[in-house]
Length: 306
Figure 1 (cartoon, helix red, strand yellow):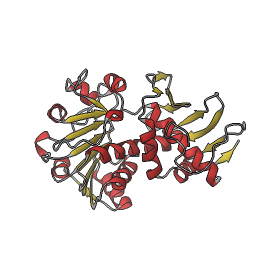
Figure 2: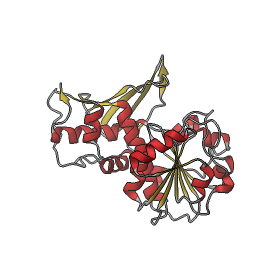
Figure 3: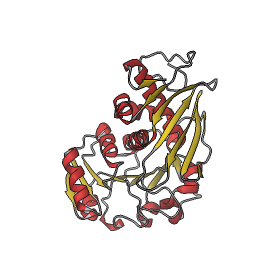
């Protein structure tokens, strides 16, 4: 085990060789369980990290970063409906360790970071999840919350009811046609949509609820009502990234805001009211998750050795 939180599995990483491993979507899923991904997120939120702002070049988004002695870069397509990309991980000496399917890793780690935030912020007895959005991110979001809380009811809302119904059948949930009805009874709410306007009314919320807002990632986008943002205890994955990209917070005037907390600063507080985790996604999450996936894949002989 390294001093930076990696080494969740028992395999010993051999970076002295020059071989690399490639994990396609199927191998990535097999190598990275949600439990391991949530543990990897704990390793991602350390002070010994570098997270330059993401850059768009042409039709691709580039996200470099470093966590401890592991660095890497994610390159993903920004073309709508074209989920392609790759995450490359490097050892401390610059040796490339492997390649992991970008869209699959992104879905898992985005769910995992919401799972970590839920574990730190939500009522321990939370039993009802409202999932707003039924796209590619939703299954892992549901799995992550189920992994850390005793969820027995999942309500899924989407602007397209048939999409919500399809996902509900897949994951054992209930589709709903009214987002307000779903959030009114929820202990945990997760939003994962490309929305540019709030998905529900502030007045519909219960008194104690935790919200994971992971869908809006530009200043122009928003999923959460302004009043909810203003009144909630807000936690972000990274302050600098949020100040450039978190439309939910920017539009509500919460950035710059000295009252915001970064996830790495969070212990196990009991705020007793509404909590909001706003994530825009940062490279340290991808690197930590990819490193664990590659370690597991080496132990299980998954993927292709190059």
